Length: 169
Image: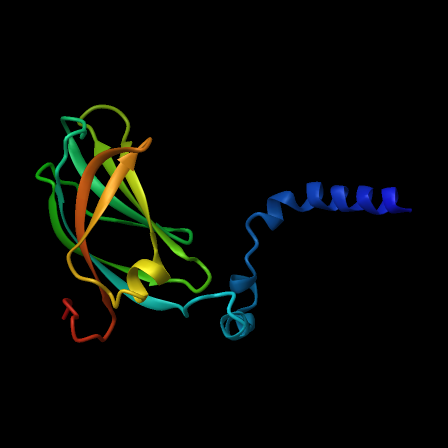
């Protein structure tokens, strides 16, 4: 009997793998959000976060040629800056920081004149620890790495919608 139950579980897992890997309880059932927050599974509610991307510094291992772009990934969305070869953006990106998605993934991309785009470096930001607990810090310097090797330092600031340090009109 036990072997039969295990076989059924394996069959269900194989059958549902495509669906279950994309299924998120938070999106399917919005009424669960307050419950997940109150029992401590989720560390914050969904809110609008502004990330002001300033510039790259200390770029010893950056590939030469082409232009560069910063991409922020959160949940299933990708937020992009404009492409520039000067390594200075001074752009603000608005992100919906979704409840239950704890990280923002920051990537530096090289867009060559000829050829495919290449990711040069990356890092991950824990929203609760690095942003909320530090009271939306200004002038943060992130170390962007590739295979453990430092590629560049990215300077940026964080702002919450409606706060006194708001930089957008």
